[in-house]
Length: 399
Image (cartoon, rainbow, N blue to C red):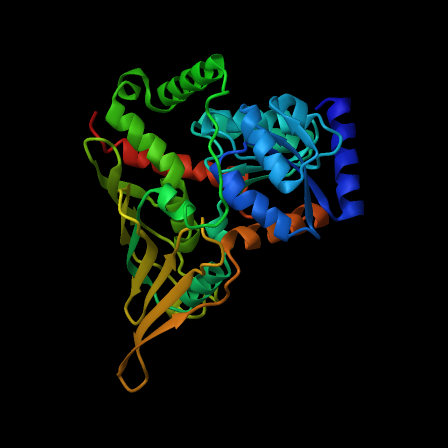
């Protein structure tokens, strides 16, 4: 760690702690930034102020900067991370550039928040993890579902159950455009002014990532390439959610299937030797978790529905948490509890803890972590576990 990095990091931390209002520079002015990040940060105006915005498309930057009153605009991410008016770099550009932008920001002494996937190879994930420690900054990953108030309630209820017998994870959804069109955010897409060499560079990086992750032969398969990218996008939400809810990554993947175009994936996992709760070991019900299986399926179609849930079966209770589209603000996650009451009569109840959306809860906790020096759970080390699960699935698929 150089003396320059240490000095910059200390300065950024001191400035953040003093002001309590975090100055955010966003890299990427695409759909998720326009529909989610800019509105959410504006609502949290007492905690955040967006001071800079960057995108390879100057038109995209100009549109969002004008709409949200952002003073500093860039088409170079290197210039944004060097800005003295930025405490936190929010990385929401194409997946291929997440790691390089995170490393640049960390070297500049800036805290970092990365939209998932953080990285798509183990080497890259390790580099991000190391950068946070080398430069004394916070780096977190945007698994917003895990910050939803309903998820905390789901986990609390699960801890009160007996051993898990079976679980189902499903995330089969319609196109983003269907939901975005009903979000009242009026995002715009700009592609005509993107330089040709930028598009070529992105394609090259995408190929390099696939080769590193899958090997030359398997990376050449359009089907396997599509599967891996789907796991990195939609799949990373589900698998991260599954990992925390069920106590970590699965022990192994016993089988997997992918459609001919790679847009639908199903897999079966086994969990072994997990405790169901952190309650006292004096409670024999929670002493040992027998092996159980998890069915996982994900995919994208053209129908305007968002069907995403995690359902857990125990002997005496069935718990399910349903997730709606994140592109329409204020749609709550809800927990369903199914069980027999003390009289043996079946009951079913819905638990809705809050209308606060997961992105808002995530950014509230991010602010607390940065200003108080505490930590969040979605660290680079945590995100790297997704890659282990990706590998389990990919190893079961034929080219």
